[in-house]
Length: 284
Image 1 (cartoon, one colour):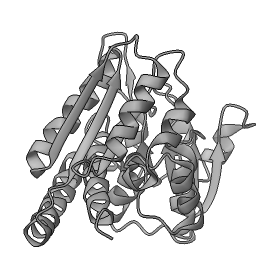
Image 2: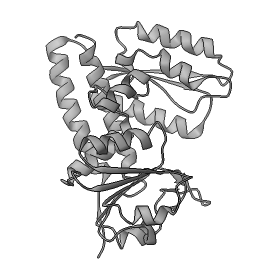
Image 3: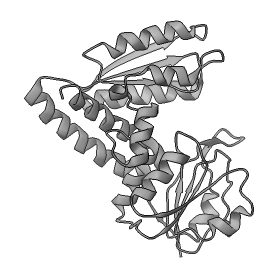
């Protein structure tokens, strides 16, 4: 048996097509073009790739794209001043500050400064609270992308045992909440979890978001499980690989996402969706 590959490339293209069609109708009706402002501080190479991809996606969608590349030496007060300016700019509907930020800048202060209605990353405590109770406008791109991938294969979550490895605010925690909202029975595992393999082997749906190359091995996976790999790691040869030992696990799982080409493209597609939602919220 070999797992069915869930292609993020294909599904993200469908999402972008849907968002573009919706955005065209919205702009024709209102005259408003959705606008996304992306701020990057410093020279982190991975962050620069993400920023370029976001700019490219805005161009494909016909969205306005505002880019702010600030030097490593930028102070917290300068960054907060820029966010305040963008909060009050009618052409900017979504604001995204690329993480990680240089030392000396408090990430929480930056997240809290963004107007929740423009917070297209959905990291602001107000938006996190909305996700918790299941009444939200925005979802973080990566967990939302995972849900879209599951939906694309008509994978029913209701009543399934779902295991999320990783408890970050960006992926692990919101991922668990979204699976819970779809009536999954959810376990969150992390570095302190005792006998992790015995828990992951129970999972009908296993989401790996731990940031460790090839961490999930075949003996940790139940026969026929759905395995979603959120990890992005570099091999010693410089290749991008996930948290799952892909070749070994693909022989055992029912469905699997590749890295690259799985969850990655979905994150940006869902960000475009959030930017459109933010543009719609701006006139309510």
